[in-house]
Image (cartoon, helix red, strand yellow):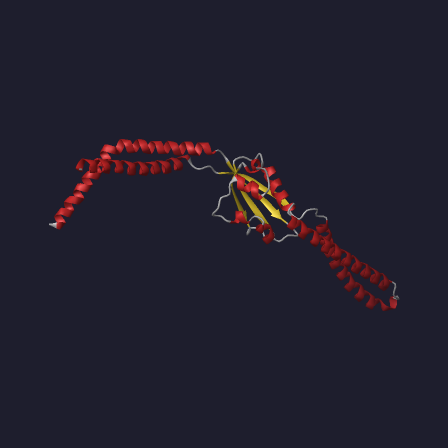
Length: 263
């Protein structure tokens, strides 16, 4: 008996669902078409999106220190607004207006961090790059580290110059020795020459660093156009979303009517 009632209930439920969809099919179809239209318009209004990479690197400041200055951007779960970006980088809010998304990559490059920018247009990309450069190079903390390291580099260069002068003086003296000690001359001269080359290379690298006027350099790496969302995919997705929402609304209305009739 229970099984029979259960079968009847299931059959009745099937009839009710079938009747519901037959009666509401046109309405659901209209709702789905509206959803598809909404998806089409949404993609159409998105416009083009561009991606750019801005590389922040330094021969003086560690990558960890560079990253620590933009900690809020390292939180991928939090999407910062244009106002947030302008406050963080101490810049006018209009500078970051084209930015729709920004991420920090600290892994791709060994001695640098990469800002990945998604932009609605590229007209203000130079201003954005300039704002990032100004933010880092005007940091009091980085300026202090930079000055201290440059002082150390100058000290090392002066020390290397002193050593190089000593080696040059030694080689000059060796060359003035009696030719009877030629074997000893060549051995001592060869060893001092290798040391001289090594010291000169170190001096050149340090002097290159001394030419730097700011702690950080900024490179605008590339700009590419992002692929816009497919119209067909967007229309199908939004038609499905609208259809599901419409279905639940119609079911609620139908159940509410049935409850009132029974009452």
